[in-house]
Image (cartoon, rainbow over all chains, first blue to last red; front, side, top):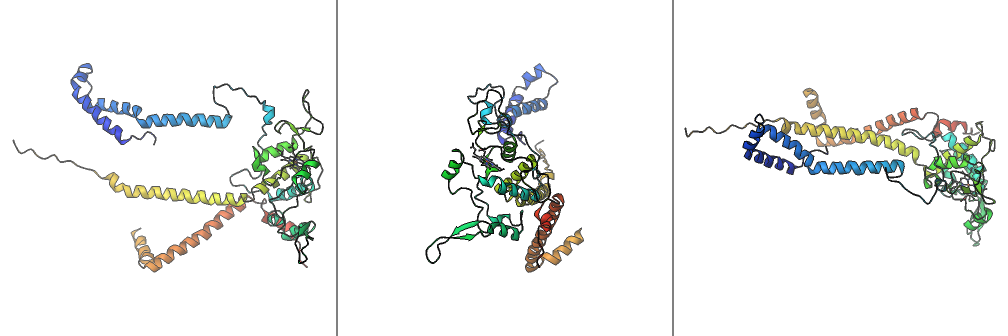
Length: 332
Length: 63
């Protein structure tokens, strides 16, 4: 497609042919067996290589492959680079984990979301809020309406004002959002040595490598390497940018008791809570993939149909033959 | 083939009212059928993972 000739190059073919015809004596002397037709063929090849389309496609191919390379490897090929940051300061790149919802056709594993909610509620909710999720969002995803209502009622929410103009406490409803652990940011920082535990609603969208990163972070705690100084109250984690994080390791084997009997290993807890957080950040995921399948099927069949119709309509024009009957010379 | 085309023309296209109704009706039928087909493939592929596959474990009988 890229090499299709622009109309102007056809013109240059003609002019080259004229030149060739004018200098046919010269050509004939050099290569007596060559005919004008063959020389015009080689000039077509020449003008393809000279054409603007060839130039443009070569440029696009070059820019494209460099862009692709830098996207893949993050640096330009054959160009040395010096960084002020060591790789440790950016954090170790997490591995890619085989999430149960990775594939194009894969939905979330809702049993895992349910277990992950339990981990969030029993562990992470002590420090992290989940502002964008209301109790009603859990209904039909990980819990029944009755379960969600019961869980909401265990929490007291402030409401009001009533007709005396006073605020009052009431048990939660489905429409209430999950309660935050701290009333405000200052309280959160004060309880965590100045570090703010971020809201987890969108955390898998807010970090490079999303769920892979959060999983690697939660399971990646280890002793700092020799010579790595770590402040009091900070913890070493190779995946966290800077490697010193104020959140201590929170997940341990058997920390949570799953109601469905799944063995609660550290990595199982992390996998479930990350699946849950991934759902919290992308609740539309299942519907989106389903709509995507439909769109791909519909649009590719429409493309095929329109290609067929185009060929059908053009076949008359493309198959016609034009004859030229030269006028008979009647002067002789 | 020509017979089919004639039959098609005579039944659906000759009267505009029939033609338009047929278009809308078949679009509706296609929409329902296509959705059902995609959903059944989706459900088969994701068997056991979706909420509807696990919800009866948690639904309590109402007495």
